Image (cartoon, rainbow, N blue to C red; front, top):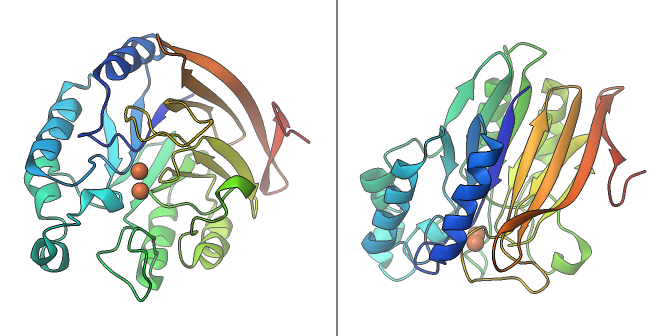
Length: 270
Ligand SMILES: [Fe+2]
Ligand SMILES: [Fe+2]
């Protein structure tokens, strides 16, 4: 049964070294199969920040699955943003923007929802294109039924009430409609710097707060998630920084039945 540690919105440039140290300590005890990083590795996509993110990735003793977020494109160098938005990602991180990992136990499919610009004022918003939806669908097909199927995307496919002023990823309903029939179990995201879970259209949505940065969303301390389980049952633990160490703050349990996920234990359970 695989164990995933899900971290997000690291925002190197605004990182807190004592929190990173605490995260290593906590994660050593968890011994994850994979560390999933759902984007925003840097604060302003500078060389210095990218170097720090690279150093962090290289120091991980566990396999990492990493995708970019909107902060990983320069907001000040507009030539770079519009012509080579992922130039520094390619130079420092050197992994695909949309990685895919398939094992008998789990399938991880990454989607890059960050965009250099759009027909709206807020360029931090995310989008998933029709082509990306088709590619993810293909990625989820032809894998064993017993493989836990996970999509990792930076932007939210669902938002809690207090975050509804933020924007959902464009085409989120269309994407979930396309992914659920091919057996998608979980969508893992970040961006809003708060931790939550929700079952939407039968799929489990899991968000993490910012794990290392001081860009805190009120009421949401630094945090990360531990996801354990398989295609029939899952447990999600919210880990929160208490100022000295990461502690288990909450546990939620989910079960797959009749083709949909349902919460069976923990806060807001049915
Ligand atoms: Fe962020
Ligand atoms: Fe973001």
